[in-house]
Length: 167
Image (cartoon, rainbow, N blue to C red):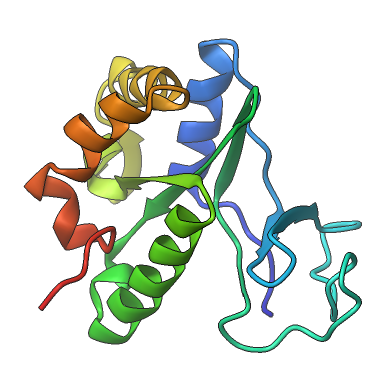
């Protein structure tokens, strides 16, 4: 399944959520078969699903960057870089996002370049308020389906990031 890492941009968004009083979960895995989130024990990905006791097969799970729970609502936040622009990854992202949405889990995508810039050979946050604004917007839409569908999903801006099928 690969080594677990937290990128700089993921840590920026994690801190932004913490700054607005929300603690997102990290090191989560979502089983599409069991429809459950699990935390990696000791930050080591499991070889099989803990609930269904079945082996993981390709396409049966996803590892969201951040997971949010608000009452009965769940969401994943993907903090994506340019690797997700490759055709193969766009297809995988689309399938995962579509399945999560079908399972009633909202999907939010933040692009690295929306929150950081490369300056003097170092990554730095563009403005501290920008990640907090994204976190606040996401938290607001967690339990507001109409707002999520009308403002977020129907926006053409998000099509290119794998939430809607790309032709």
